[in-house]
Image (cartoon, rainbow, N blue to C red; front, side, top):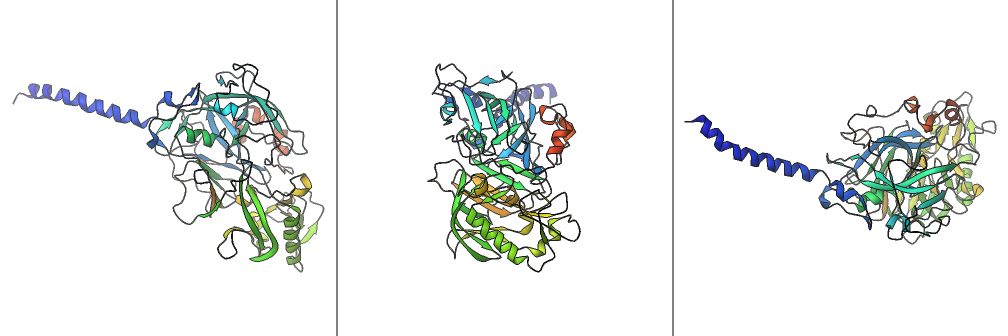
Amino acid sequence: MNRKAETRKLFPWVYIFFFYVFLLSSRVQPSEAATKDSPKGHVKLQNQLLASSVVFPVSGNVYPLGYYYVLLNIGNPPKIFDLDIDTGSNLTWVQCDAPCKGCTKTRCSSSHVLCSGLDLPQRRPCLDPQDQCDYEIGYSDHASSLGALVTDEFPLRLENGSTTHPHLTFGCGCDQQSPGPHPAPPTAGMLGLGRGKVSISSQLSYLGITKNVIVQCLSHNGKGFLSIGDELVPSSGVTWAFLALKSTSKNYMTGPAELLFNDKTTSVKGINFIFDSGSSYTYFNAEAYQAILGHIRKDLKGKPLMETKEDKSLPVCWKDNKPLKSAYDVKKYFKTITLRFGSQKKGQLFQVPPESYLIITEEGSVCLGILNGSEIGLDNYNIIGDIFFQGIMVIYDNEKQRIGWIPSDCDKLPNVNHDHGGDSKEEAYPRGFGLIRWFFSGTDSYKNKKQQEKLRKKMTKISLIRWFDKMV
């Protein structure tokens, strides 16, 4: 047989084979044109089957830092930003120079769905459709951010192995203020994951990249993970409660619930709770706070713990004969707190063990991580903050308008093949947790060590019940 003639016959089939391989591989990557901003707002991905999830490692703690954060790539070439996770607000913003270099300004024309959706009382009127879309957002701890909406590239590596570079809208903050008694977190900005259209999760869902589902898991040891998409949602074992859709706010509110202590009623019923990862501690209204504090104090009678006013870390603290090192050292003296949503017989239980509502301070005292919200102007609002979220997976399901939770080992990152969701040619940092702060010594977030030292003082940061944040 003539081998050369046989080889020539094979050549056309080889070309056809590689042509089909090229077509298949191109379908895996979302079209860049499909993710860019358009005059009508956004263009959805053509292939809706690409919906996947993006997973980020989380670092931080309730005390002494007072916040949890993720690293997110923005821009081309990508730049890493450390962002405070906040399910209590919608707008993602970063500290940036004015004017923003390399990003596209969002115009204030009413045709732009996100700009027109900013229902902010402080937003300036749109006199010219070509003007930039300004924003001014404030938080209940009196911190604020002022700037303009911009659009830039967010390189993401998804769980299905594909990469995408959607152009998302966020705030370019040129003026940040924190006049309150506690210093603002030294992060580069805020990752808004509320229920509004401008939140990152809503934008990714609108583009067909991920489902509008947020999965958050915070550990007691400064680790955790955050996912946008539904691939990490367990198929069973999750306790679900429906969101209060009649609420005018875009917060994750559910209820009514009954407050239990040691599986027994406290007679506090019919209260609603807001799930807010931007709040370090949990806040009860005056009735619920006094009830739970009364039960704890009564239960501690005859125990070796003595209430102390010397430690100012939090309003209510106790000390032992010697400095404490862990909440597990005193867990036996405290009881489980339970929020029972729904009916008494078939209610959904949100159980909080002592290690998830107590902190151990630098002075070795144990303090109550539940605060009286009425004393700081929250009135009748009840907020579940990060301290209650430790050791459980919380699922914010905007697709089905519900919120779920399940005990989990949040120290372990799910089986992912990427580091921080970013798609860059080189790894920005080794995959894992406990990111070293001097790694960012060249950024504005960590200009000096004094700012870091301040974080080791009392930080009672709340990010919910915004004055301005009423985005739809």
